[in-house]
Image (cartoon, rainbow over all chains, first blue to last red; front, side, top):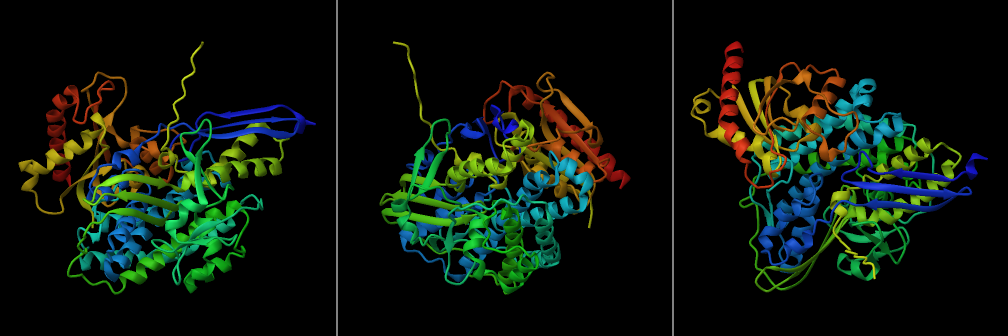
Length: 433
Length: 158
Protein backbone atom coordinates (compact mmCIF):
# COMPACT_ATOMS: atom_id res chain seq x y z
CA UNK A 1 0.00 0.00 0.00
CA UNK A 2 2.54 2.52 1.19
CA UNK A 3 4.63 1.66 -1.87
CA UNK A 4 2.08 3.51 -3.98
CA UNK A 5 2.23 6.76 -2.06
CA UNK A 6 3.46 10.00 -3.57
CA UNK A 7 7.08 10.52 -2.55
CA UNK A 8 8.95 13.81 -2.72
CA UNK A 9 12.44 13.80 -1.30
CA UNK A 10 14.67 16.83 -1.42
CA UNK A 11 18.19 16.72 -0.04
CA UNK A 12 19.18 20.36 -0.43
CA UNK A 13 22.84 19.85 0.51
CA UNK A 14 24.40 16.40 0.54
CA UNK A 15 26.65 15.86 3.54
CA UNK A 16 29.93 13.97 3.52
CA UNK A 17 30.78 14.47 -0.14
CA UNK A 18 33.58 16.65 -1.49
CA UNK A 19 31.77 19.83 -2.49
CA UNK A 20 28.17 20.91 -2.87
CA UNK A 21 25.40 18.97 -4.54
CA UNK A 22 21.73 18.23 -4.00
CA UNK A 23 19.34 15.44 -4.83
CA UNK A 24 15.69 15.58 -5.80
CA UNK A 25 13.49 12.56 -6.13
CA UNK A 26 9.86 12.20 -7.11
CA UNK A 27 8.05 8.87 -7.10
CA UNK A 28 4.45 8.26 -8.08
CA UNK A 29 2.39 5.08 -8.04
CA UNK A 30 5.33 2.97 -6.88
CA UNK A 31 7.68 4.20 -9.58
CA UNK A 32 10.48 6.75 -9.59
CA UNK A 33 9.43 9.42 -12.07
CA UNK A 34 12.11 12.02 -11.55
CA UNK A 35 15.48 11.75 -10.00
CA UNK A 36 18.30 14.26 -10.35
CA UNK A 37 21.66 14.65 -8.71
CA UNK A 38 22.18 18.38 -9.03
CA UNK A 39 25.64 19.79 -8.82
CA UNK A 40 25.16 23.46 -8.09
CA UNK A 41 28.62 24.46 -6.97
CA UNK A 42 29.73 27.33 -9.21
CA UNK A 43 31.81 26.33 -12.23
CA UNK A 44 35.51 26.79 -11.68
CA UNK A 45 36.67 27.61 -15.23
CA UNK A 46 40.13 26.11 -14.71
CA UNK A 47 40.45 25.18 -18.37
CA UNK A 48 40.04 28.84 -19.31
CA UNK A 49 42.56 29.95 -16.69
CA UNK A 50 45.12 27.67 -18.31
CA UNK A 51 44.85 29.32 -21.72
CA UNK A 52 47.87 31.46 -22.53
CA UNK A 53 49.88 30.00 -19.64
CA UNK A 54 53.38 28.61 -20.04
CA UNK A 55 53.66 24.81 -19.86
CA UNK A 56 55.83 25.15 -16.74
CA UNK A 57 52.92 26.71 -14.84
CA UNK A 58 50.49 23.91 -15.65
CA UNK A 59 51.44 21.36 -12.92
CA UNK A 60 51.02 23.90 -10.11
CA UNK A 61 47.84 25.38 -11.54
CA UNK A 62 46.02 22.08 -12.02
CA UNK A 63 47.07 20.93 -8.54
CA UNK A 64 44.77 23.66 -7.25
CA UNK A 65 41.69 22.02 -8.75
CA UNK A 66 41.45 19.56 -5.89
CA UNK A 67 42.69 19.52 -2.30
CA UNK A 68 42.19 15.75 -2.08
CA UNK A 69 43.67 14.61 -5.42
CA UNK A 70 46.17 17.30 -6.54
CA UNK A 71 48.75 14.63 -7.50
CA UNK A 72 46.37 13.08 -10.03
CA UNK A 73 45.94 16.44 -11.78
CA UNK A 74 49.70 16.97 -11.81
CA UNK A 75 50.36 13.48 -13.15
CA UNK A 76 47.83 13.66 -16.00
CA UNK A 77 49.23 17.08 -16.95
CA UNK A 78 52.93 16.20 -16.97
CA UNK A 79 52.35 12.93 -18.80
CA UNK A 80 50.35 14.77 -21.45
CA UNK A 81 52.98 17.46 -22.01
CA UNK A 82 55.93 15.06 -21.94
CA UNK A 83 54.28 12.80 -24.46
CA UNK A 84 53.79 15.74 -26.85
CA UNK A 85 57.33 17.01 -26.28
CA UNK A 86 58.79 13.52 -26.89
CA UNK A 87 60.36 13.62 -23.44
CA UNK A 88 61.17 10.43 -21.54
CA UNK A 89 62.06 11.37 -17.95
CA UNK A 90 63.64 7.96 -17.32
CA UNK A 91 63.13 5.11 -14.85
CA UNK A 92 63.94 7.06 -11.66
CA UNK A 93 61.27 9.71 -12.29
CA UNK A 94 58.76 7.10 -13.41
CA UNK A 95 59.31 5.04 -10.25
CA UNK A 96 59.11 8.00 -7.87
CA UNK A 97 55.93 9.24 -9.54
CA UNK A 98 54.37 5.89 -8.78
CA UNK A 99 55.27 6.30 -5.10
CA UNK A 100 53.83 9.82 -5.08
CA UNK A 101 50.61 8.50 -6.59
CA UNK A 102 50.55 5.74 -3.94
CA UNK A 103 50.62 8.51 -1.33
CA UNK A 104 47.56 10.13 -2.84
CA UNK A 105 45.61 6.87 -3.08
CA UNK A 106 46.48 6.16 0.55
CA UNK A 107 45.29 9.49 1.90
CA UNK A 108 42.25 9.89 -0.35
CA UNK A 109 40.95 6.35 0.12
CA UNK A 110 41.57 6.41 3.90
CA UNK A 111 39.70 9.69 4.15
CA UNK A 112 36.76 8.39 2.17
CA UNK A 113 36.43 5.04 3.92
CA UNK A 114 36.56 6.42 7.45
CA UNK A 115 35.19 9.94 7.34
CA UNK A 116 32.67 9.68 4.52
CA UNK A 117 31.48 6.14 3.76
CA UNK A 118 31.81 3.85 6.80
CA UNK A 119 29.45 5.88 9.05
CA UNK A 120 26.65 5.03 6.57
CA UNK A 121 27.26 1.30 6.80
CA UNK A 122 27.57 1.30 10.59
CA UNK A 123 24.55 3.51 11.25
CA UNK A 124 26.20 6.76 12.30
CA UNK A 125 25.55 10.27 11.04
CA UNK A 126 29.24 11.03 10.94
CA UNK A 127 32.73 10.07 11.99
CA UNK A 128 32.42 11.62 15.47
CA UNK A 129 29.68 9.21 16.51
CA UNK A 130 31.50 6.35 14.83
CA UNK A 131 34.75 7.24 16.61
CA UNK A 132 33.11 6.71 20.00
CA UNK A 133 32.10 3.13 19.13
CA UNK A 134 34.92 2.21 16.76
CA UNK A 135 37.88 4.29 17.97
CA UNK A 136 40.53 1.81 16.80
CA UNK A 137 39.15 1.70 13.26
CA UNK A 138 39.06 5.51 13.06
CA UNK A 139 42.57 5.82 14.51
CA UNK A 140 43.84 3.28 12.00
CA UNK A 141 42.20 5.25 9.18
CA UNK A 142 43.69 8.54 10.35
CA UNK A 143 47.10 6.92 10.63
CA UNK A 144 46.97 5.55 7.08
CA UNK A 145 45.75 8.92 5.81
CA UNK A 146 48.63 10.66 7.56
CA UNK A 147 51.11 8.22 6.00
CA UNK A 148 49.74 9.08 2.57
CA UNK A 149 50.10 12.78 3.34
CA UNK A 150 53.69 12.20 4.44
CA UNK A 151 54.53 10.52 1.12
CA UNK A 152 53.07 13.50 -0.76
CA UNK A 153 55.00 15.90 1.47
CA UNK A 154 58.24 14.01 0.80
CA UNK A 155 58.02 14.73 -2.93
CA UNK A 156 55.78 17.78 -3.01
CA UNK A 157 57.06 19.89 -0.12
CA UNK A 158 53.58 19.89 1.44
CA UNK A 159 50.64 17.53 1.47
CA UNK A 160 47.92 19.89 0.21
CA UNK A 161 48.53 21.30 -3.28
CA UNK A 162 52.09 19.93 -3.46
CA UNK A 163 54.61 21.87 -5.52
CA UNK A 164 57.41 19.35 -6.20
CA UNK A 165 56.25 18.11 -9.61
CA UNK A 166 57.49 19.62 -12.87
CA UNK A 167 57.41 18.63 -16.52
CA UNK A 168 60.39 16.25 -16.85
CA UNK A 169 60.38 15.04 -13.24
CA UNK A 170 60.71 16.65 -9.81
CA UNK A 171 62.17 19.94 -8.64
CA UNK A 172 63.94 18.10 -5.86
CA UNK A 173 64.86 14.50 -5.03
CA UNK A 174 64.03 13.38 -1.47
CA UNK A 175 67.04 12.68 0.76
CA UNK A 176 67.92 9.01 1.16
CA UNK A 177 67.62 9.22 4.96
CA UNK A 178 64.07 10.64 4.72
CA UNK A 179 63.12 7.89 2.28
CA UNK A 180 64.54 5.20 4.58
CA UNK A 181 62.63 6.58 7.58
CA UNK A 182 59.38 6.68 5.63
CA UNK A 183 59.88 3.19 4.23
CA UNK A 184 60.19 1.81 7.77
CA UNK A 185 56.89 3.45 8.70
CA UNK A 186 55.17 2.16 5.56
CA UNK A 187 56.37 -1.34 6.35
CA UNK A 188 55.06 -1.10 9.89
CA UNK A 189 51.62 -0.12 8.55
CA UNK A 190 51.14 -3.27 6.43
CA UNK A 191 49.29 -5.21 9.17
CA UNK A 192 46.95 -2.22 9.62
CA UNK A 193 46.13 -2.15 5.92
CA UNK A 194 45.57 -5.91 5.86
CA UNK A 195 43.22 -5.58 8.83
CA UNK A 196 41.45 -2.72 7.07
CA UNK A 197 40.66 -4.93 4.05
CA UNK A 198 39.12 -7.56 6.34
CA UNK A 199 37.24 -4.84 8.27
CA UNK A 200 35.66 -3.32 5.16
CA UNK A 201 34.66 -6.80 3.96
CA UNK A 202 32.96 -7.41 7.32
CA UNK A 203 30.85 -4.24 7.15
CA UNK A 204 27.10 -4.84 6.75
CA UNK A 205 27.10 -3.71 3.11
CA UNK A 206 23.81 -3.83 1.20
CA UNK A 207 23.66 -6.64 -1.37
CA UNK A 208 22.69 -4.96 -4.63
CA UNK A 209 24.01 -6.52 -7.80
CA UNK A 210 23.69 -4.28 -10.86
CA UNK A 211 24.77 -4.37 -14.48
CA UNK A 212 27.25 -1.65 -15.39
CA UNK A 213 30.28 -1.09 -17.59
CA UNK A 214 33.63 -0.72 -15.86
CA UNK A 215 36.29 1.52 -17.43
CA UNK A 216 39.90 1.81 -16.25
CA UNK A 217 43.47 1.99 -17.44
CA UNK A 218 45.28 -1.25 -18.12
CA UNK A 219 49.04 -1.62 -18.12
CA UNK A 220 50.97 -4.62 -19.52
CA UNK A 221 52.40 -5.65 -16.16
CA UNK A 222 51.41 -3.40 -13.30
CA UNK A 223 48.30 -2.23 -11.48
CA UNK A 224 47.50 0.98 -13.38
CA UNK A 225 48.33 4.42 -12.05
CA UNK A 226 50.24 6.64 -14.46
CA UNK A 227 50.09 4.86 -17.80
CA UNK A 228 48.12 2.32 -19.78
CA UNK A 229 45.38 1.89 -22.35
CA UNK A 230 41.74 2.68 -21.65
CA UNK A 231 39.81 -0.58 -21.41
CA UNK A 232 36.33 -1.70 -20.43
CA UNK A 233 34.71 -5.03 -19.59
CA UNK A 234 32.69 -4.59 -22.79
CA UNK A 235 35.78 -4.94 -24.98
CA UNK A 236 36.88 -1.33 -25.27
CA UNK A 237 40.67 -1.12 -25.69
CA UNK A 238 41.96 2.21 -26.97
CA UNK A 239 44.97 4.47 -26.61
CA UNK A 240 44.36 7.53 -24.42
CA UNK A 241 44.60 9.82 -27.47
CA UNK A 242 41.40 8.21 -28.84
CA UNK A 243 39.28 9.06 -25.77
CA UNK A 244 37.27 11.77 -27.54
CA UNK A 245 36.19 9.37 -30.27
CA UNK A 246 34.31 7.15 -27.84
CA UNK A 247 33.56 9.33 -24.82
CA UNK A 248 31.32 12.38 -25.06
CA UNK A 249 30.42 14.97 -22.49
CA UNK A 250 27.16 16.84 -22.41
CA UNK A 251 25.38 19.15 -20.09
CA UNK A 252 22.17 18.20 -18.38
CA UNK A 253 19.75 20.67 -16.91
CA UNK A 254 20.40 21.62 -13.31
CA UNK A 255 24.01 20.61 -13.05
CA UNK A 256 27.17 22.66 -13.45
CA UNK A 257 29.11 19.43 -14.06
CA UNK A 258 29.15 17.75 -17.45
CA UNK A 259 27.90 14.20 -17.86
CA UNK A 260 30.29 11.91 -19.70
CA UNK A 261 29.12 8.86 -21.66
CA UNK A 262 30.89 5.97 -23.35
CA UNK A 263 29.12 5.32 -26.66
CA UNK A 264 26.14 7.20 -25.19
CA UNK A 265 25.92 4.90 -22.16
CA UNK A 266 26.72 5.53 -18.47
CA UNK A 267 29.80 3.77 -17.13
CA UNK A 268 31.81 3.40 -13.95
CA UNK A 269 35.33 4.59 -13.17
CA UNK A 270 37.14 4.36 -9.83
CA UNK A 271 38.41 1.70 -7.42
CA UNK A 272 35.79 -0.98 -8.13
CA UNK A 273 36.14 -0.59 -11.91
CA UNK A 274 39.93 -0.62 -11.61
CA UNK A 275 39.98 -3.71 -9.42
CA UNK A 276 37.40 -5.55 -11.54
CA UNK A 277 39.55 -4.97 -14.63
CA UNK A 278 42.99 -5.45 -13.08
CA UNK A 279 42.68 -8.33 -10.61
CA UNK A 280 45.53 -10.13 -12.38
CA UNK A 281 47.78 -7.11 -11.82
CA UNK A 282 47.60 -7.26 -8.02
CA UNK A 283 50.85 -8.28 -6.31
CA UNK A 284 50.50 -11.79 -4.81
CA UNK A 285 50.39 -10.72 -1.13
CA UNK A 286 47.57 -8.26 -1.88
CA UNK A 287 45.64 -10.86 -3.86
CA UNK A 288 45.89 -13.29 -0.94
CA UNK A 289 44.40 -10.74 1.47
CA UNK A 290 41.61 -9.99 -0.99
CA UNK A 291 40.83 -13.68 -1.56
CA UNK A 292 40.70 -14.25 2.21
CA UNK A 293 37.73 -11.87 2.45
CA UNK A 294 35.57 -14.41 0.64
CA UNK A 295 34.17 -11.67 -1.63
CA UNK A 296 34.46 -12.65 -5.26
CA UNK A 297 35.77 -10.08 -7.72
CA UNK A 298 34.96 -8.94 -10.35
CA UNK A 299 31.98 -7.75 -8.31
CA UNK A 300 28.71 -6.26 -9.53
CA UNK A 301 27.81 -4.90 -6.11
CA UNK A 302 28.68 -1.19 -6.15
CA UNK A 303 28.99 -1.25 -2.35
CA UNK A 304 32.09 -3.40 -2.74
CA UNK A 305 33.79 -0.14 -3.73
CA UNK A 306 34.72 0.33 -0.08
CA UNK A 307 36.52 -3.04 -0.11
CA UNK A 308 38.23 -2.12 -3.40
CA UNK A 309 39.46 1.10 -1.77
CA UNK A 310 40.93 -0.83 1.14
CA UNK A 311 42.60 -3.26 -1.28
CA UNK A 312 44.13 -0.31 -3.11
CA UNK A 313 45.40 1.11 0.20
CA UNK A 314 47.22 -2.17 0.81
CA UNK A 315 48.46 -2.19 -2.79
CA UNK A 316 49.73 1.39 -2.44
CA UNK A 317 51.73 0.45 0.66
CA UNK A 318 53.25 -2.60 -1.04
CA UNK A 319 54.11 -0.65 -4.18
CA UNK A 320 55.64 2.28 -2.32
CA UNK A 321 57.75 -0.09 -0.20
CA UNK A 322 58.85 -2.03 -3.29
CA UNK A 323 59.91 1.04 -5.24
CA UNK A 324 61.61 2.72 -2.27
CA UNK A 325 63.53 -0.41 -1.26
CA UNK A 326 66.30 0.35 -3.77
CA UNK A 327 66.07 4.15 -3.63
CA UNK A 328 69.17 6.00 -4.78
CA UNK A 329 69.65 9.71 -5.30
CA UNK A 330 69.69 10.52 -9.02
CA UNK A 331 72.20 12.87 -10.63
CA UNK A 332 69.27 15.06 -11.51
CA UNK A 333 65.63 14.80 -10.50
CA UNK A 334 64.33 15.90 -13.90
CA UNK A 335 65.05 15.73 -17.62
CA UNK A 336 65.30 18.84 -19.81
CA UNK A 337 62.42 19.86 -22.02
CA UNK A 338 62.21 21.03 -25.61
CA UNK A 339 58.75 22.36 -26.40
CA UNK A 340 56.77 21.63 -29.55
CA UNK A 341 53.31 22.47 -30.83
CA UNK A 342 50.42 20.03 -31.06
CA UNK A 343 47.82 18.18 -29.02
CA UNK A 344 48.92 16.60 -25.74
CA UNK A 345 46.95 13.77 -24.10
CA UNK A 346 47.34 12.52 -20.55
CA UNK A 347 45.28 9.99 -18.64
CA UNK A 348 46.04 8.61 -15.20
CA UNK A 349 44.12 6.84 -12.45
CA UNK A 350 43.05 9.41 -9.85
CA UNK A 351 41.80 7.86 -6.60
CA UNK A 352 38.25 8.33 -7.95
CA UNK A 353 39.05 7.00 -11.43
CA UNK A 354 40.20 8.06 -14.89
CA UNK A 355 41.39 11.64 -15.12
CA UNK A 356 41.79 12.61 -18.77
CA UNK A 357 43.56 15.80 -19.95
CA UNK A 358 44.07 17.35 -23.36
CA UNK A 359 46.21 20.41 -24.01
CA UNK A 360 46.56 22.11 -27.37
CA UNK A 361 49.96 23.72 -27.20
CA UNK A 362 51.50 26.53 -29.21
CA UNK A 363 55.04 26.38 -30.59
CA UNK A 364 56.23 28.70 -27.79
CA UNK A 365 55.10 26.27 -25.07
CA UNK A 366 51.93 28.12 -24.09
CA UNK A 367 48.54 26.49 -23.66
CA UNK A 368 46.10 27.39 -26.48
CA UNK A 369 43.24 25.35 -25.02
CA UNK A 370 42.75 22.74 -22.33
CA UNK A 371 40.16 20.08 -21.65
CA UNK A 372 39.93 18.19 -18.37
CA UNK A 373 37.53 15.27 -17.81
CA UNK A 374 37.48 14.38 -14.10
CA UNK A 375 36.21 11.07 -12.71
CA UNK A 376 33.14 12.52 -11.02
CA UNK A 377 31.61 13.80 -14.24
CA UNK A 378 32.26 10.38 -15.75
CA UNK A 379 30.43 8.71 -12.86
CA UNK A 380 27.55 11.17 -12.69
CA UNK A 381 25.24 9.34 -15.11
CA UNK A 382 26.13 6.02 -13.45
CA UNK A 383 25.27 7.43 -10.01
CA UNK A 384 21.82 8.43 -11.26
CA UNK A 385 21.28 5.03 -12.89
CA UNK A 386 22.39 3.35 -9.66
CA UNK A 387 19.98 5.50 -7.63
CA UNK A 388 17.09 4.44 -9.85
CA UNK A 389 17.94 0.76 -9.52
CA UNK A 390 18.94 0.64 -5.90
CA UNK A 391 16.02 2.68 -4.56
CA UNK A 392 13.57 0.58 -6.56
CA UNK A 393 15.30 -2.59 -5.29
CA UNK A 394 15.39 -1.26 -1.71
CA UNK A 395 11.65 -0.67 -1.90
CA UNK A 396 9.71 2.57 -2.15
CA UNK A 397 7.53 1.45 0.76
CA UNK A 398 10.28 2.63 3.10
CA UNK A 399 9.86 5.94 4.90
CA UNK A 400 11.10 9.16 3.34
CA UNK A 401 13.89 9.30 5.91
CA UNK A 402 15.00 5.75 5.10
CA UNK A 403 14.85 6.38 1.34
CA UNK A 404 16.80 9.57 1.74
CA UNK A 405 19.49 7.84 3.77
CA UNK A 406 19.76 5.02 1.24
CA UNK A 407 20.04 7.53 -1.60
CA UNK A 408 22.77 9.44 0.19
CA UNK A 409 24.58 6.20 0.95
CA UNK A 410 24.51 5.26 -2.73
CA UNK A 411 25.91 8.65 -3.76
CA UNK A 412 28.61 8.77 -1.09
CA UNK A 413 29.72 5.28 -2.05
CA UNK A 414 31.09 6.78 -5.31
CA UNK A 415 33.19 9.30 -3.39
CA UNK A 416 32.06 12.06 -5.76
CA UNK A 417 34.34 15.07 -5.85
CA UNK A 418 31.90 17.77 -6.80
CA UNK A 419 34.46 20.57 -6.72
CA UNK A 420 36.55 18.80 -9.36
CA UNK A 421 33.57 18.20 -11.59
CA UNK A 422 32.15 21.70 -11.89
CA UNK A 423 33.56 23.17 -15.05
CA UNK A 424 30.65 24.39 -16.96
CA UNK A 425 28.10 27.15 -16.77
CA UNK A 426 25.10 27.35 -19.02
CA UNK A 427 23.64 30.80 -18.51
CA UNK A 428 19.93 30.97 -19.23
CA UNK A 429 18.04 34.20 -19.17
CA UNK A 430 14.28 34.06 -19.41
CA UNK A 431 12.56 37.32 -20.09
CA UNK A 432 8.91 38.15 -20.19
CA UNK A 433 7.80 39.28 -23.63
CA UNK B 1 60.67 12.44 20.27
CA UNK B 2 58.30 15.06 21.49
CA UNK B 3 58.74 18.78 21.00
CA UNK B 4 57.95 21.22 23.83
CA UNK B 5 55.82 23.61 21.78
CA UNK B 6 54.33 23.25 18.32
CA UNK B 7 52.69 26.28 16.71
CA UNK B 8 50.34 25.45 13.82
CA UNK B 9 49.09 28.29 11.64
CA UNK B 10 45.91 27.05 9.97
CA UNK B 11 44.55 28.80 6.91
CA UNK B 12 43.80 29.08 3.22
CA UNK B 13 44.75 31.67 0.57
CA UNK B 14 41.45 33.55 0.93
CA UNK B 15 41.37 36.96 2.62
CA UNK B 16 41.57 36.91 6.40
CA UNK B 17 41.68 33.11 6.40
CA UNK B 18 45.39 33.64 5.60
CA UNK B 19 46.07 34.96 9.06
CA UNK B 20 47.42 31.65 10.41
CA UNK B 21 49.97 31.57 7.57
CA UNK B 22 50.88 35.24 7.96
CA UNK B 23 51.50 34.66 11.67
CA UNK B 24 53.74 31.66 10.90
CA UNK B 25 55.80 33.69 8.40
CA UNK B 26 56.21 36.48 10.94
CA UNK B 27 57.19 34.02 13.68
CA UNK B 28 59.85 32.47 11.47
CA UNK B 29 61.44 35.90 11.13
CA UNK B 30 61.23 36.78 14.82
CA UNK B 31 64.52 37.10 16.74
CA UNK B 32 63.32 35.37 19.91
CA UNK B 33 62.60 32.20 17.97
CA UNK B 34 65.95 32.22 16.20
CA UNK B 35 67.91 31.86 19.45
CA UNK B 36 65.95 28.87 20.79
CA UNK B 37 67.77 25.51 20.84
CA UNK B 38 66.67 23.10 18.09
CA UNK B 39 63.71 20.85 18.86
CA UNK B 40 62.16 23.10 21.51
CA UNK B 41 59.63 24.94 19.38
CA UNK B 42 58.31 24.07 15.93
CA UNK B 43 56.31 26.36 13.68
CA UNK B 44 54.26 24.99 10.79
CA UNK B 45 51.75 26.39 8.30
CA UNK B 46 48.82 24.10 7.46
CA UNK B 47 46.58 24.46 4.41
CA UNK B 48 43.07 23.41 5.51
CA UNK B 49 44.37 20.24 7.17
CA UNK B 50 40.98 18.77 8.18
CA UNK B 51 41.31 15.53 10.09
CA UNK B 52 45.08 15.55 9.43
CA UNK B 53 45.33 18.02 12.33
CA UNK B 54 45.02 15.03 14.63
CA UNK B 55 48.43 13.83 13.52
CA UNK B 56 49.89 17.34 13.21
CA UNK B 57 49.48 17.97 16.92
CA UNK B 58 50.80 14.59 18.04
CA UNK B 59 54.18 14.32 19.84
CA UNK B 60 54.04 17.83 21.25
CA UNK B 61 53.73 18.76 24.92
CA UNK B 62 51.92 21.98 24.06
CA UNK B 63 50.15 22.93 20.87
CA UNK B 64 49.13 26.39 19.78
CA UNK B 65 46.71 26.69 16.87
CA UNK B 66 46.45 30.02 15.13
CA UNK B 67 43.32 30.46 13.05
CA UNK B 68 40.81 33.00 11.82
CA UNK B 69 37.67 33.16 13.96
CA UNK B 70 34.12 33.90 12.85
CA UNK B 71 31.93 34.52 15.87
CA UNK B 72 30.17 37.78 15.09
CA UNK B 73 32.57 39.80 17.25
CA UNK B 74 34.16 43.04 16.03
CA UNK B 75 36.75 42.24 13.30
CA UNK B 76 40.22 42.27 14.85
CA UNK B 77 39.07 40.93 18.23
CA UNK B 78 41.68 38.63 19.74
CA UNK B 79 40.62 35.21 21.04
CA UNK B 80 42.33 32.81 23.41
CA UNK B 81 40.42 29.52 23.68
CA UNK B 82 41.30 26.21 25.31
CA UNK B 83 41.09 23.17 23.04
CA UNK B 84 38.64 21.49 25.38
CA UNK B 85 36.22 24.42 25.06
CA UNK B 86 35.92 24.14 21.30
CA UNK B 87 33.54 21.82 19.50
CA UNK B 88 32.22 21.49 15.99
CA UNK B 89 29.16 20.12 14.27
CA UNK B 90 28.46 16.38 14.30
CA UNK B 91 28.47 15.93 10.51
CA UNK B 92 30.79 17.65 8.12
CA UNK B 93 31.86 17.82 4.55
CA UNK B 94 35.62 17.33 4.26
CA UNK B 95 35.70 20.72 2.57
CA UNK B 96 34.78 22.48 5.80
CA UNK B 97 36.36 20.18 8.34
CA UNK B 98 37.92 22.87 10.50
CA UNK B 99 39.81 23.13 13.77
CA UNK B 100 36.70 22.75 15.93
CA UNK B 101 35.65 19.60 14.05
CA UNK B 102 39.15 18.14 14.45
CA UNK B 103 39.06 18.81 18.20
CA UNK B 104 35.62 17.20 18.47
CA UNK B 105 36.84 14.13 16.61
CA UNK B 106 39.92 13.91 18.85
CA UNK B 107 37.79 14.00 21.98
CA UNK B 108 35.41 11.37 20.62
CA UNK B 109 38.49 9.17 20.16
CA UNK B 110 39.22 9.71 23.82
CA UNK B 111 42.25 11.92 23.16
CA UNK B 112 43.27 14.54 25.66
CA UNK B 113 43.02 18.03 24.13
CA UNK B 114 43.93 19.97 27.27
CA UNK B 115 47.43 20.71 25.90
CA UNK B 116 45.91 22.58 22.93
CA UNK B 117 45.35 26.31 22.89
CA UNK B 118 43.80 28.33 20.09
CA UNK B 119 44.79 31.92 19.46
CA UNK B 120 42.69 33.64 16.85
CA UNK B 121 41.53 36.92 15.46
CA UNK B 122 37.98 37.68 14.39
CA UNK B 123 38.00 37.93 10.59
CA UNK B 124 36.32 40.73 8.68
CA UNK B 125 33.46 38.99 6.83
CA UNK B 126 33.17 41.85 4.33
CA UNK B 127 36.83 41.73 3.29
CA UNK B 128 37.67 40.08 -0.07
CA UNK B 129 41.35 40.85 -0.71
CA UNK B 130 44.43 38.68 -1.04
CA UNK B 131 46.15 40.27 1.97
CA UNK B 132 44.72 40.72 5.47
CA UNK B 133 41.89 43.16 6.20
CA UNK B 134 43.02 46.35 7.99
CA UNK B 135 41.33 45.23 11.23
CA UNK B 136 43.10 41.86 11.27
CA UNK B 137 46.45 43.31 10.18
CA UNK B 138 46.22 45.82 13.04
CA UNK B 139 45.62 43.01 15.56
CA UNK B 140 48.48 40.83 14.25
CA UNK B 141 51.31 42.34 16.40
CA UNK B 142 49.24 41.69 19.52
CA UNK B 143 48.62 38.08 18.46
CA UNK B 144 52.34 37.55 17.84
CA UNK B 145 53.18 38.98 21.25
CA UNK B 146 50.68 36.60 22.75
CA UNK B 147 52.22 33.62 20.92
CA UNK B 148 55.64 34.55 22.30
CA UNK B 149 54.29 35.04 25.83
CA UNK B 150 52.42 31.70 25.90
CA UNK B 151 55.33 29.85 24.31
CA UNK B 152 57.81 31.20 26.86
CA UNK B 153 55.57 30.17 29.74
CA UNK B 154 55.23 26.67 28.31
CA UNK B 155 58.94 26.32 27.64
CA UNK B 156 59.76 27.34 31.20
CA UNK B 157 57.41 24.66 32.49
CA UNK B 158 58.72 21.95 30.14
